[in-house]
Length: 185
Ligand SMILES: Cc1cc2nc3c(=O)[nH]c(=O)nc-3n(C[C@H](O)[C@H](O)[C@H](O)COP(=O)(O)O)c2cc1C
Image 1 (cartoon, protein in one colour):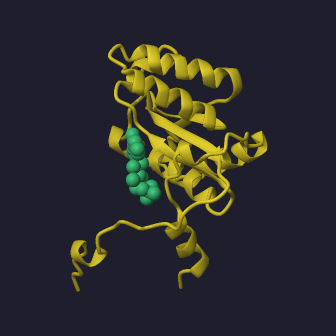
Image 2 (cartoon, protein in one colour):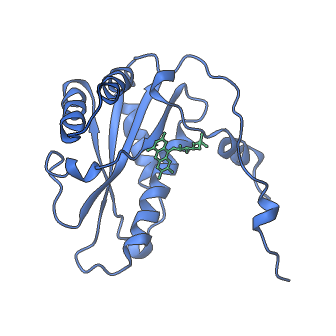
C-alpha cells in the first residue's frame, strides 16, 4: 500500500518563485528542519555529498551583489530581477556537493544524491506557506571563491526560500507516464 498522504504531498510539491513571496523571514528553526530533512537523502556508500551555505539578512545582500558582479554581461533587467528576487526571499540556500577524497563513486551519483536532498527540502515545504525553487544561474562556478569552495566541491545552484500568502491552483504540466513505462513481464 502507498499511503494516500504521501502521494498527495508529492503531487502538491511545486516551484514557488520569488515574485510569489511576501518578503517575510522564515524562522531559523524551520530552515534547520528543512536541512535536517535534506540530510536523510539516500547516498551511495554513505558519502553524504551535500552541504549547504545558507544566506539571510546582510549576507543575502552580499550574495546578490556577487551574482550581479560576477556576470560581466549582466543586463539592467537581470540586475533588477536578482535584486528583487533576493529582497523577497527569506533565505537563499546554496546547494553544494563535495566528492569524497577517493572519488569512490561516479560524480553523477553524488549529484543525484544532492538532488534527492533538495527534493526533501521541496517536499517539506508543502502546505506550510513556505516555498521555493531551485535556480541554476549560468556561470554559477564564478561564485566558487566567494563561497570558499575547495577542490572537489561544487555549487549546484541556489534554492530560493520564502513565505507566500496564497497560490493559484497547481497545473501539473506533465506527460502521461504510460508512454514512458515499459512493463516487462
Ligand atoms: C536541477 C534543477 C534546476 C532548475 N533550475 C531552474 C532555473 O535555473 N530557473 C528556473 O526558473 N527554474 C529552474 N528549475 C525549476 C523548474 O523550472 C521547475 O521544477 C519546473 O518548471 C517544474 O515545475 P515544478 O517544480 O512546479 O513542478 C530547476 C529545477 C531543477 C530540478
